[in-house]
Image (cartoon, rainbow, N blue to C red; front, side, top):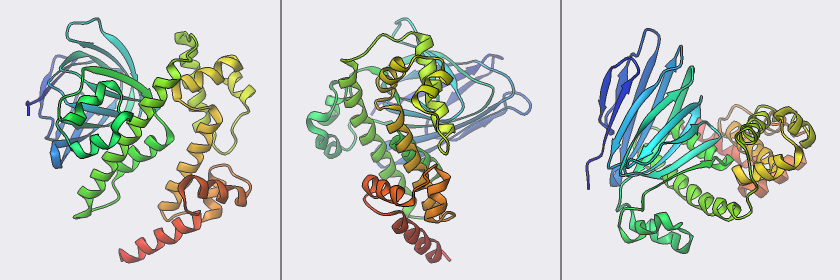
Length: 333
């Protein structure tokens, strides 16, 4: 397997050569912080977590060689990335909790500009060949870029930025938090990594099908649709109507409905329902909420309706989750 490397330099001239498998921490300026930690799983799958705190906008130049298949997720904050591959003109990409990326780049360089405040991200690097049995299970569902993985070969070179589904968001959040310690921790991280890969590949197929029905969207339209996403997530308890949402986001209702599905692979209110149920599940699994409290916390006023939607979505009732959380908590004492 080829060794892959990564280098990073800040706009103040410092240069850092980063070992992808080792932790790094350094102060950029007083009260600013850049920290990254990595966990190596069987098969040389690497989970890398990054945490940055900046008092003012900064720019970082990066260069990467022989990078494996990589899945990237933003947990908090926002960054703009200008990335060039093999001498091609740079592509501008937004890194935010609403978007994720999957890529395989032999050589990439560019500029990374995280916004002021806190920025947290998680990435999974999967070398080829990696777990052939898993890749072969996908069969015809594999997109063309990834088909070589089922034959033990490196995938074709590509970079895709995709919307994050509520299921992916929930999986990456629990992977980052990792509530399990001891011998079970590695197994937990392996399972979550596989879950994210499966969700990503299924989502790539859905987005490819939707692209055939795409409508033209300007940069302003795209920004408005991302704003609508943020408005819905911030207002689970009292969400706006579709007309109100379009007005708040600064876009007409038709473009909001069509464009939201085009960018995020779902409708605004399917997204709202999924986010509510995933948030409720997190509340219930924490052991800090009973069923009624979780129901109200995510904006459902009818308990019976909430229980029915939850059972349909997860295959178990909210009460089942509460009892499981209680047994886990009591067993730990």
